[in-house]
Amino acid sequence: MKHIIITGTSRGIGEALAQKLINSNHRLYCISRRPNQNLIDQDNHMQYYSFDLSETYKIEAFFQNLFAHIKRDPHPEGIYLINNAGVLSPVAPIEHNKAEDIARHMQINLIAPMVMTSHFVQHTKHIETDKRIMNISSASAKYLMPSQSCYSTSKAGLDSFTKSINLEQENQRNPVKIAAVYPGGVDTRLQTEIRSVRKEDFPYVDAFIQLEKAGKLQSPEETADALLHFLNQDDFGKQAVVEHLIPISG
Image (cartoon, helix red, strand yellow):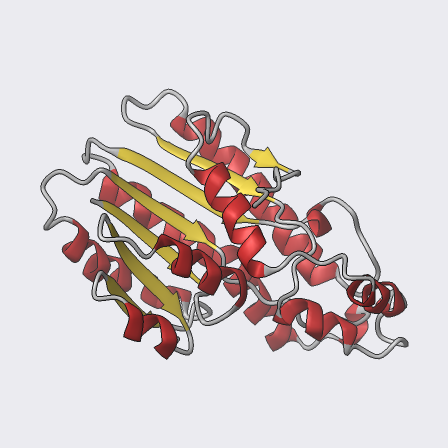
């Protein structure tokens, strides 16, 4: 059985990933601040955790509990972690961003994936199986815009962190394969949020509105298909940061 941990499953890409991974050969561990009752009602091969990732000091105990379940399987086919959860706000010139909003943003988008990766590596170190971590990054890590300093910084940090762990693991006997990926423009709550920002706070808001009107955003389901295709490739982790997903047709 494959054990798959997914963060941010309340909606969007995370929910779509979980939906597509529901399978009798998969044990899913879904994590979000607000539980997704639709997912919970669908499958008994799932454990759902209501957990606020901004409370990073609680992750150690949380992962001890989670891996107590995983380690009941004496011969897991694979253990995967998908760090998908993320926030966009605050979106404004830096002088308008409150300290507590900046800190919460970084806790969720960067610190939580770092801490979860740390505990994932610790708990799986002596487990002989296929181990993979997929970090959902963003082109905003590379292509910068005003008023998105927090988001771009957190995603650039996630990319650098992924590259570092990729280097650490490459000479291990049973390594954790890790990669960060840019999913592209996806029709999620984050896109809705960016389109609602005042132009004086985000001068490029009209471009995002036009992108949605032109139908150029991917659906979460299409994106989930491409992400899972990427996750399951034999050479996953060979490249630490992947900027272009291959669309899956049909």
